[in-house]
Length: 183
Image (cartoon, rainbow, N blue to C red; front, top):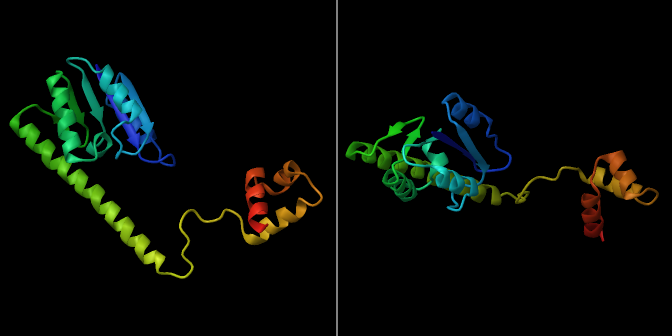
């Protein structure tokens, strides 16, 4: 039996392309989740690992969907091999339980970990540069301008929250936060 595993790191990312690729690969079941790869206790990953039996194949599109660190990848694959389970990383091929197969896994896992570390480093550098600007503000930009919020708060003098939400599209919770902030 072929069991597929798909993962994206954030809620805003899309699982569809991985799911389609795993489906095209002929996976009997596909487990998917939106969960950061830096965490070991990914619920769907643990579920797929528990379902795998001798002779089954775990299929993932890329090594970094499966494990983010070299040690994690090697240990997980080792455990799967000991259980008689094959591992197929689609952009690498079937990982074989041979000295050459384990070497290739180790090298590719090292590259995946290196790539992740470089992304983190570049992100931190970008944030450090951005913090030097006077207008820097951490987090997501405001969805509504000050003028829009002032207008909506002004409408609250003569309308209910529900009416203002209907007129402006600004949610009640956002209006309450803005009202508290303005004092």
